[in-house]
Amino acid sequence: MLSFLALTLAHPRPLPGTAEEMARQATRAALAALQTGHLRVQVTLPTGAGVDETARCLASSLEAEGSRCRLYVPRALLPLWHGAARCSSLGLGDPQQDDGAFVVLAPCNRVRYSADDEPDGHVLESLQGLLSRAHDRPVVLINADLEALVLSPRPLRPVRPMFMADFVDAFFLATAEGPTPGDTVAVRRAFPAAWEVWRCLAPHASDPRRHPSREDDSLARRRAAPWPAASNRIAMSQLCDTRPLVADVLAEGNRRAPPLPPAAAPKESRPGFGI
Image 1 (cartoon, rainbow, N blue to C red):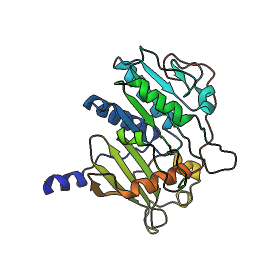
Image 2 (spheres, one colour):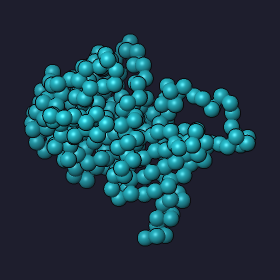
Image 3 (tube, rainbow, N blue to C red):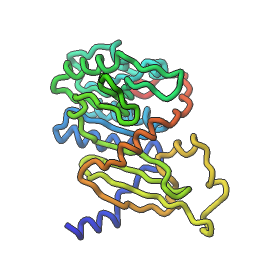
Image 4 (cartoon, rainbow, N blue to C red):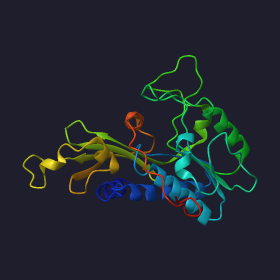
């Protein structure tokens, strides 16, 4: 067991360095969980680049495996998905008998972090209705941010709805700045592997790989890639059988980060879930 652990730490599966690779890893992990028999699966990703791509990739993969997939997206994003087959918003499109699987993108009923954001009070009720009608059909949540209806909400540690206990973390990735300026830490879980805690060490000031233009990236540029460049020193520091406490801290920080500007609507739509 110790030799296996040492081998795993020495040669871990690389973290995704692009949004496309993150979508591929998340899709593989979600499909693996579904094929194992889990019917309620959730995927958690850093907010921004790659989230929509993951939804498209997963929905297309389910269709390719013969499951007629219905995709639910937030109402504010619905115009960007115009032309995508079987795409609607929670509360606007009821599941059909021939639907084989459901993918729900970014369901949220919590107050966001700016004065312009308002919680959608119908999301929780609509999602509960979907779960009750889905029966034994798979449901995948991507970046769910849900809070139970309680008398005293806790902004930093929300009480999750009871039905979330039925969902298995098929893929989880959250990142944050490390304790040392320039460092990055991350937590990943890709089903069926264990939870991984990573640390990426920025090049030292005397390191010839260091370049001034890399020292102070803008927020948008830092979040455009899920993980720093491979030129940095990267190491996995811990393996966990259960979800580490730092995972929730990092995920909450990713949610609090302001979103990247939305992509422009495409001129033409393609069949299926590509837009």
